[in-house]
Length: 572
Image 1 (cartoon, helix red, strand yellow):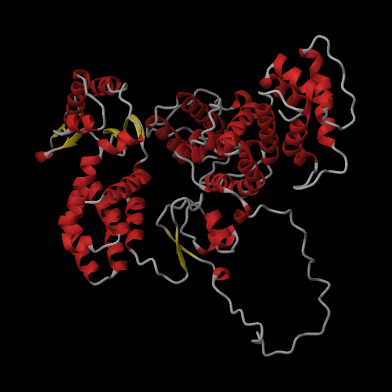
Image 2 (cartoon, rainbow, N blue to C red):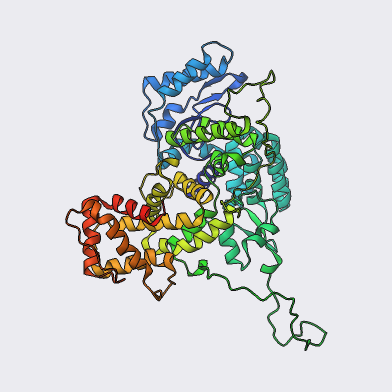
């Protein structure tokens, strides 16, 4: 059994399970940690019991269970076996509280599930036949082992039919066996991905997504627009989320075209008539940064923008509560009930849920009928029944806005580096949002909360305001260290210049951004520096302007400098 196969299976499981560092209740209310590891399982006869290997599994992950933890496992088993008991919920809640001090990282999560991963691979080998299993490519082995990890009993059931399909090299049949079992188990998305891994990759007109691919990157790679790729794959969800291993249909525009210039393309003679005056002339388009021109950090930033958000509630909450459906509101409640952390985000989600119900039913005391449903909606409110895609304030689709804004900001991520640019973005979002959103950690990690905050901010404020906020965040970063005149001139040109009409590779006719900086310093300087001397408005960021910038940054602090400057500009 190769370590490479273990790693691939663990990676595949993480895609579906999501790695949780602490114990949480899964969809079946089972205490779960890591990639779906449950210390309490159903044994023979349908009785719930503590997994016999639990202590050894945690020890392998470097976690020593105390007597308190072991008793908590027993309490969870009691609650599962006696759901109608009056004390069942209290004992379950107490057990989860006593497990709250257990936290694991990614490596520990892999070690914790290591035995189950090995058992799943062995079970797949046994069910399919080791000789047959060994001849498969790793991606197909991973799919079968993943199915065995999810449900050993189901794998035993479908094993014979899978074996026949594999012998016949009928990969479509093998895929459909897995997918049908997913429907039966109520886990269609997971088993659809397993089916995708089983199919023959050499399919004309299709492309298989690799790790790190997104719709945006695949569209650019094959020379088609994002809309064309979406249209060719109508089965994609509203967010266009794809996973490594998915097969996508390529638009006809991506298929190779005849390249022989000598071959006539039409039997008709070319027309000598002038073009019709009714034909609209092509409109000049704003230059877009091609993905091929971006570095690793710029491409990573673009790819992250095209990926779905980490939690279902965040996919809903990126829209204004007035745009939610009733079912979406319920899904938000279910979601933040499952994820106890981060607390600030969950409190914010609760407030947005209250906003939805107040908009939908009014601010009076809410009442429910005998069927548990809310009373009639507030007069004049037409409820939204079908989920709608997120949009920016001007009505444009959010996904389109993210693609355009991302293309504009990506070069800055290349220039500053992913971590530094992310920190600047976090600072900018905190400045723009104020107390309207949970405050982001300014740690340079583009994690799930930063990803949501960015997308929500674009939806709430529009791309221009986020562009401005990013510029303020970058300005705060450079204000943390004293700047030499030539450095400040170049950095402010890079940061503020594009917002005042400059173009990449050149300066604007009038250095408007330099005038803005000097005027802003003259406005805020007297508030923080007792002997302030006004700057001459000459558009030259030289020694005097640099000295004034450094003086305000040192006296007021970088954050206050940038906040006051942003307020003066009207960007906050």
